[in-house]
Amino acid sequence: MSTKDLNTLFDEAFSNAQLIPQESVPQDMQLVLYGLYKQACSESANQTHYQNPQDLINAFKLNAWMQVKHLTADEAKEKYIEIINSLLKERNL
Figure 1 (tube, rainbow, N blue to C red):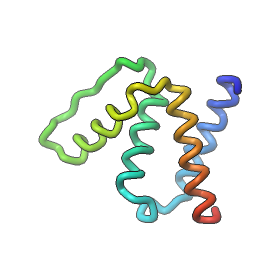
Figure 2 (figure 1 turned 180 degrees about the vertical axis):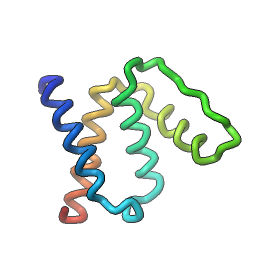
Figure 3 (figure 1 turned 135 degrees about the vertical axis):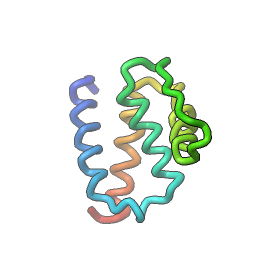
Figure 4 (figure 1 turned 90 degrees about the vertical axis):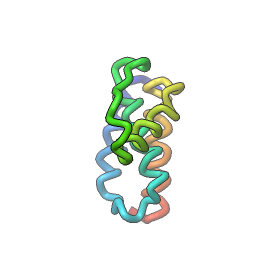
């Protein structure tokens, strides 16, 4: 798959994700999707943003991103697309 095709599919998956009611997606899956999205969109795989560790929500988000830091941006996009398509199919959207 070419990078252009992957980017188009990723953009479509991101748009389609907006159709899924947030409350219908378990929080752990939301965090996985967040981490994949951040990794897919990061310009540098080594880029790290440190946030206030006392902010629990941001700590969970940062942890979710760190869990997928080993993936390339393209791998993260592929996994994100796969999960969104699966969620859409489960919800018949």
